[in-house]
Amino acid sequence: MADEDPKIPNEEQILKQLKESGSPPTRKTLIEKLDNWDDWASWDEFYRTYSNFVFHVARKAGLSDDEAGDVVQETFIGVAKNLQKKKFDTSLGSFKSFLLNQARWRILDQFRRRKKQQDREANLYAGEEPEERRTAPIDRCADPNGVALEKLWEREWQDKIMDIALRRVKALVSPRQFQIFSCYVLKGWSPERVKKELGVNAAQVYLAKHRVGRILKREAAKLAEAEE
Image 1 (tube, rainbow, N blue to C red):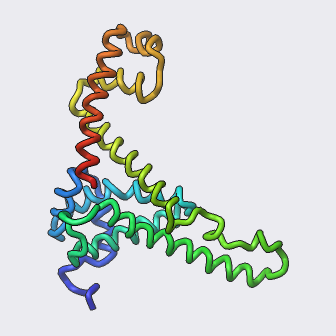
Image 2 (spheres, rainbow, N blue to C red):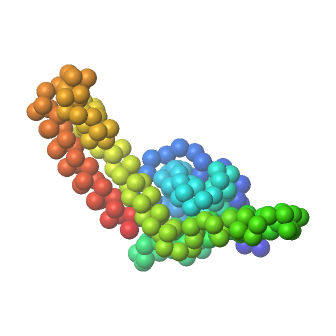
């Protein structure tokens, strides 16, 4: 059987190795490294880059923490097997769409499992609840196979890109400038509060805003281009 091929790690090995630490490079560079099953550092990076993202999408689609955790595990096992079988080419199509499809199927699977459980419970208590109370959870949630999930996916994807861009920017500017930018732009402090609490003047506040903001836009644009 394919799963018993010694060249392909089993599911426990994949999950164990993926949950280690790492820092993400660009999407294309990282995926190209995943051809080497012995390169666990790249698998670590891949998992840390995208696991929280998939988890948050699954939770916002209506799944519980446990269900979303299952989606993450099953999604990355599926991604690993598809990459091993050369079913995704970095020169063709969008990785974002590829990952969306992998996660979408697992999210739907969780809703189906929940529906089966509710159907079993409904059969035990048939006639005791109004019809609207017996509607399956999958019917009460936003359609995970439709436009709603794609919009949610896009929002989370952009948030992920911005988070990575912020980490890159933090390494490119002085700690002081990033602190000013964080308080003024990210936290929404007034200029007066920034000046008072950080002991800086107005010129320093606006310089940090424009300089760090310009670098942030540049890094976010580079990441967005690479991730597509």
